[in-house]
Length: 280
Image (cartoon, rainbow, N blue to C red; front, side, top):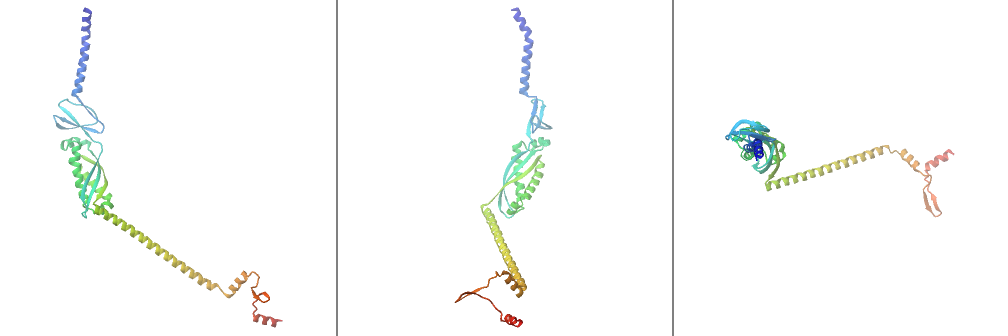
């Protein structure tokens, strides 16, 4: 018994220390005297609910439990899609789908959280109405046709106006994309009819141009043939014709049919005969 009691007395301090360490570790985990800010986040420090000027970067930070709390805010680039209906300059109703890439300014997350709130409140309370207003103002300056043909110009105006409008809230616009336009059925049919008419007009113009070119080609060919015939008439002399006939003669006289059979047809010029007799 004495040995058992002595062993218990010797082991008691070690067991007490182990139990105390476990209790302290458990208490630290429960109270959490530190805050962890993940990658792509910033920490908003609050003391008894009041936002402080300090902004925590990524990593682990010691804090005072109970007194201090940390709200983690995402500062990565986010993409949200918005739809807004607006009237064009020629009073056509246009529904535009707009994609916005944005993020919270990491240096102003405490102010943004204090004045606006978390990400969802930023989207619902700040970005959505801003997109709608800027889009309506930009669309009203252009006709429905210009909205399509000057899409890049419209996108640039919306991008600039939206950046300027949201910068004061600590929100940075990275890019704006015009995803799609939707028009009223009547206007869509009108656009389709216009495009068909333009294609038909281009086809008719092509056919007319082709006919004109073919007619001009015929005229040029006729002129060439007439000029060739004129030059040929100037060069065809009696001597040349006789020379060409001699060159093409195969050595046989033409024949005629008579009662005695075929006889050669010889053209005898009386003048040549008389001249021949005189020479004899």
